[in-house]
Figure 1 (tube, rainbow, N blue to C red):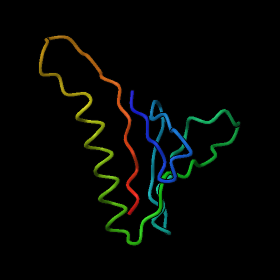
Figure 2: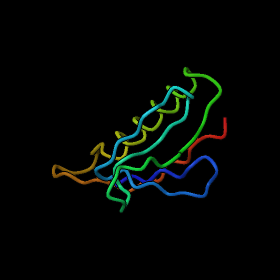
Figure 3: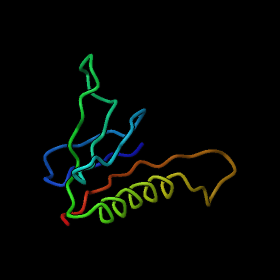
Figure 4: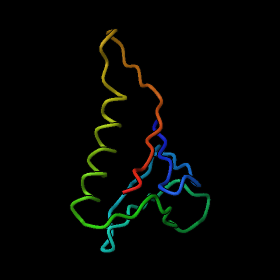
Length: 88
């Protein structure tokens, strides 16, 4: 299970069964884990350039993959982790 703490540190977003995206304003939003009937976006962070937003997006993906790497045993084990969205 991976949680993402928003850039402003006010929101914890659970990635379980969720999606994240970069919009045209270089904001990263999460979708899919709210209790609302419609799919409300959760603001996670905003970056100066599209390139920086993609770098952060890649860091999130790497953090998720690193949680699921199994070095010590033959059965599946998934660790829990929290990714803090960078300020800039």
